[in-house]
Image (cartoon, rainbow, N blue to C red; front, top):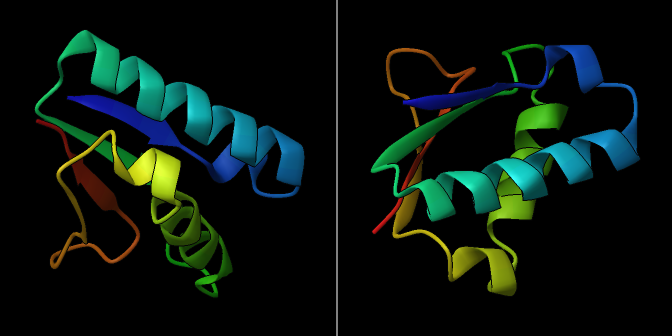
Length: 81
């Protein structure tokens, strides 16, 4: 399973957007069934930003569903086709 940890990038908006975009396209192209994005628990702002990114219409076309891991709320699972 591919994984993206956003902890080192949490202060730079442009880097976060670029990392998310590259990760989602790479995971989709690689044929991964599931990939994880780790925004961490914190205040929830980074997680909300990641979910908003994933909900964009052109990004939404790349995956089947996304979910916040019920056992670890600081982890988002993205399920691809």
